[in-house]
Length: 427
Image (cartoon, rainbow, N blue to C red; front, side, top):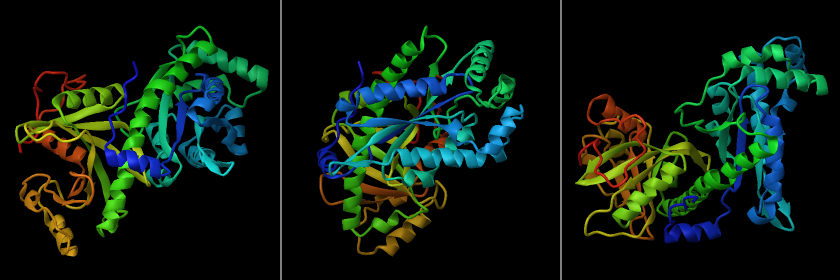
């Protein structure tokens, strides 16, 4: 069955009820011409709208073909492929339309969120990344952008569709340009900005069957992942309110980064189950550390989620300490100052001196690697903010590169019940 999201903590539940968390989601269907982006996109929107009475959100379709300039259309109709110079302003228009379409509407005095399905070739990883670049994540109403790669293996099938489309509608894109798109296409990779679901669009006997499978993905796997992300956003809203009350809100400047959020597990069973849920939602284990005799696993979010214009790339899931049970739920968030290296603590010392009245926890400053400066926020036990020089994923990569830790084996999917055979830094 569909994995349930990790259980939010008490303060996260309260924040979820009190906040106006972004609820609109975007799904970008991408791939070469003829793979079915527009056909499946329109059909998916119909299904999402049919489900609107249950989900509370309707859906809207954005066809990137409609946003090409007249000059670009004319160029393609002559059989000339677009250049990156042609594509840059077009992708900017697609991004703007996607964000505007996600804007909530006032219906009978309350905000109603909507999902957006975008059909866009987005052939290169940089094209896809441009749709989710950080400054655009500042949208207060778009919670996430989910990429779905429509894969069609047979070139002949694509050419047949393109010829039929041009004959029936006079579409500006000729079949002769298909090879240029195949040459330009960059397949999905481990780039966390644009990690996506691969959908084999040519294995279904009909459009209805393909759309049913795509809707199933959106309504189950993607929806489950997005639901737990919303509990994380609710926690971050509460965490930030307490950060402001402590007089530390301006530590989240444009130069800093939300490094990761930590999900605290009360028992080993919850720890294993939480990792399994994150894996089933499409996220991957970046590394594991043995700190003070217990496992702490870092999970790379694929894709990351947005919160208040910031991108959150990772979740830390620690094994509970023996004899020190804590309630399950989101516990703290960590901030990377994006200054200095993974060794040293000079910028943390400067931060401490800047806020002399704060009751800082200082023992983490003595750590040789990934030193930290922390502060316990008022409220539920364990809620805290921790500052580091560099993001945790960068620290993990640093350790692996220098032989201080082993990378997860190829195809590693996280732990079941066994003790991990690789580990990171020792605490």
